[in-house]
Length: 293
Picture (cartoon, helix red, strand yellow):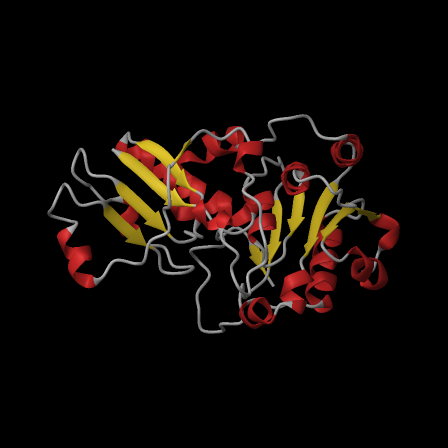
């Protein structure tokens, strides 16, 4: 049995897709394959991304050929449950946990194909310890990032992640997500300072100039300057994970930075709303112990 998951988007989204496929392959004792044809296309109104999982200590095979498929029609969704020679195609409901994925019992030789982002910790929380060991850089950090790591490990560290970039300048992303705003970060920083007055903030952002011009408490702040390396997102994620506390953006990258942390004194502050959809519940994405503001 092969479990194939379509990989798309930035590093954080790639990790959601990988982790969900990994958990399913462990439960069903199947081979995990990744379909990466998405990266061979130029998608309109989508931020360009690189396939970055090879730079982590994750284990998988690549699915040969094109793997981008359309969501199955109703008749196929019914048929695939009873026909062992038909691949079982599962399509996610965005930001909603589908318990069926954790209980599905396909035929012994029936292949499974996962299509979607699978943005819920409930799909893979059973293998969290394994993911903590795997989601590490293959190579040592470069000198600039190693310097930041030393500072993080020698202080009472809190990560601040600010995503502006496409959330401000790309209309599609701005409409769905949008920038959280200065008030969110000011409030989050005050909460963290109340818990530890000696805290040191480490700021990760695609717009450091905005952060330098607007964030308070800059005497307690280190700005993480991104390098031009292709593996910069990998190295910055590793730094996020090493922080003791986390003030995350509505971004899957900093979500993983917080969720993978093994801090002895964890504290995660997350936005009350992940997107501009005010009617959606975020209980499947944000763990109950995270503080939402």
